[in-house]
Each structure stands twice: as structure tokens, then as C-alpha cells.
Length: 187
Image 1 (tube, rainbow, N blue to C red):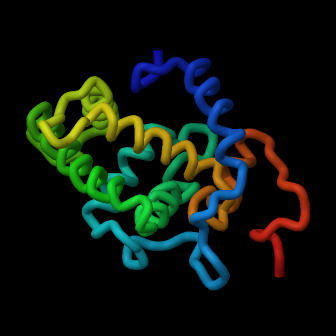
Image 2 (cartoon, rainbow, N blue to C red):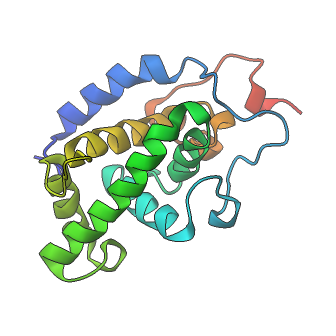
């Protein structure tokens, strides 16, 4: 059984379902001149604390073991870029509440902020959110977990022009080679 209630097979099945949708070009991507690997200072929607907490959460969903993980693929840059789109404004508010929920559940369970607890404890906090802990009348922690989980997978496997999948790390993991011409490979 995986850290967040998924075994390896279930995780790969979810990835396989998302691959078809993710590899189709999204209408929300960067245009020419857009940075492929934004630093927290270049964040479009996240403040530095939100960036760090979301990056840590994504890094627990897709950790770095023998393969590139969410941090190496700049998944948080992908999510930040998507949230900058006006069509995703509702998710920006959900991420603000979700970061607060991560912090509150971490404090309740371990007496510390999410960024200050051990990775195994971060997994417990994420699993608690997945089970709905941290929900309020206006915020569903379980829904937030599904959104961050889905965007983490998308950020790992999307076309790099959208801000994630830095150096095509996610594509290399699954053995995907894009057909030429490819916007990230042009001059």
C-alpha cells in the first residue's frame, strides 16, 4: 500500500488514465518568452509560503526516489501558471484554503507547520486531507486533495510549454517521445 492509500498498480493506472488527457495540448499554456522553470520570485499567483507548501505536498505525491519527482519537474510552477488563468480563479481560492488546511492539520497532528514535519508525517497529513480532515462548511479537504493530486500528475506529464515537466522529466519516466516539430525543441 502506498503512502497515500494507493499501491503502485493503482498509481500507475491513474497515471495511464491521465496520460491521454494530459498529453493533448492545453489551451492555457505559456506563449513565447514565458519561463519554463519559474522560481518562487517569479510566481504568478502563489506567495512564497504557498509555493513552498504546495511544492512540498506535490513532492510527497510524486517523490524523488530513483526517478525525477514533482520538484524536479517543476510541478508547482505548472500549478501556479494554471491558477493565474482567470478560468481557474475558483481553484486559486481552493489552494489558499488548502494550504491553510495543510498547515492546520500538521499543527494539530504534529505541533508544527507542514514544511517543518518529516516526510512521513507530511504523508499522514495529506492522507488526512484525502479523508476529509480539515474540511469546513465552505471547503472540502477531500476535494482539494483530488485537485492537487490531479494537477500534480498533469504538471509531471504536460507539455513543458505549460510550465511543468521541466526537461521533459515526466515524459522520460513513461518513455514518451513527442513527434517533431515540438514547440519546446524549436530554436
